Length: 220
Image (cartoon, rainbow, N blue to C red; front, side):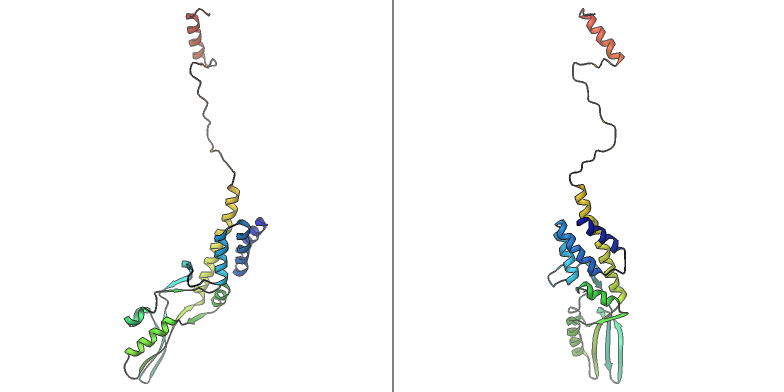
């Protein structure tokens, strides 16, 4: 069954139209067959999403995500001004981290990747907006703050997950193939050295030395 799962997983990984959720479920089965708890745990987290206590992979993190701001100044309304975290008041920046993390399940990420433009807020942006408004003068206000990015950015996360699965699907198979296998390095084998006191008579020089010694002992 393990070989069947491996073949199926490798074949479908090359098909970009194959949903990642199905591939991850095969990884769950493969981890159970091979006894790889690490493979099962990673597949489970990608399928169900990452919790607050989980270590999230780097490919699910984005740095300095643009922020869209809606504001009013007197009779002037502005919508969709793009700012960065550094444009926030210093007191508000501590509530808006430099890094934004996608912890959603894989099927939710696939839905987001299909959209042209994404816009979402966070509790930190809500607090930052309230702090900013307290520092503004009369007839001025920040009416909304939200992160903005394209769906293609989330598509990059899915590509990274597919690539990681390709590397992990080959690992267990190679490990099982190597067990109990011993290979000798190619090269000339060393001949066993002769034991002390013994001459190899196949060598002409050794034959002459033997006759010389034997003649001295009166044996020839």
